[in-house]
Amino acid sequence: MIEINNISKSYPDFSLKNVSFTVEKGDYFVLLGGSGSGKSMLLEIISGITIPDSGKIFLNEKDITGEKIQKRNIAFVFQDQVLFPHLSVFQNVAYPLHCQKKSSTEIKNEVKKLAVLFEINHLLERKPGTLSGGEAQRVALARAMATKPECVLLDEPLSNIDSPLRYELRSLLRKINRQGQTIIHVTHDYEEAISLANKIAVIENGSIAQSGNPDDIFMFPKSEFVAKFIGIKNFYRGTLNSAEQNSELMPFESQGCIFHVMTEETQGEGFLLIPAENITISDKHNESSSQNTFNGKIIDTFPAKLGIEVVIDIGVKITSIVSKEAFIKLALLKDKNIWISFKASSAKFIKI
Image 1 (cartoon, rainbow, N blue to C red):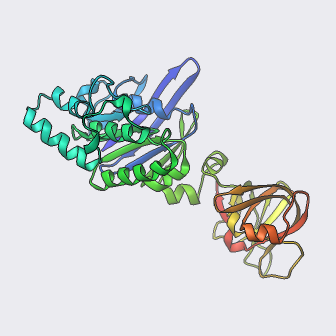
Image 2: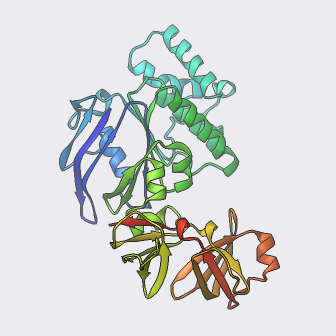
Image 3: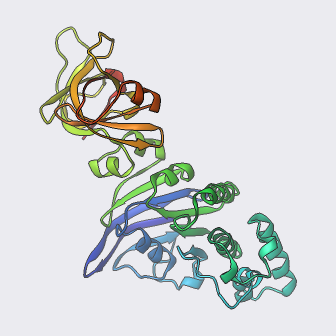
């Protein structure tokens, strides 16, 4: 278990501010944030490369804040792998075992096991300069695992890998984690985080904005920053008012626009999240069971992974995702007047 307790570190142009989180043994913990948010700096502090100004780091309840790098039993895989260019792949993987003064037989056997696990048997005699990005990343991971570390730190491990190979490496990382290896992984890619993590901490400008399991974060973001960063399109701050007489619907007002929602929360300030895929579009006003119907004008459209995103001005900007077939059939062009609707039950109110 790794405990990060009120870690702070100041530089002239940036500061980490009282960062705290806990990584249990066997966790796949992802630090998710944009460039310059402090993610990589946190890894450097955990590894011992950088010493914090204040705060403590505990590994299995032992204070390791001031311990040397080589005594922490924490492995670090850098974004650019940092393989020794003059050594073969075999020698790179074997290097930390030599440092531990293992026998030649032990080293050979351990490298052989790692080569099978990371599928690099055919690369053992090659030099790093001849490897592809994906091959180099596998070698770097094998070297990191050679000493059986308590935790492996991964700094943007998939950012320089071609798309088809990313899925293979994600699968490999999940396999390593399922075997019990604790991993702390830094990324700016929320889809990468969802596919790997059992715990996520979103970091904003040197502070933890929100942490928890992926479902909590992606279904109940606690701030506009978190919502936007994880790709949520329709997220509004406003006020939930009491239900009208003989109605179970509660009006939520944001920027002059009133939405009707179903929630067990009491009235007050909060956020409303409306999934884009739950918003239907029509070119005429139809009677429907949807409790929220608005007229608006299309202000933008663009391709997305799940179809076409259509951005509509209804007094506030709201985004719907439609299929390519529906996009063509309805002729959803910019400046067209349309109707949108969604059910009250599809909107989620998050109280502040």
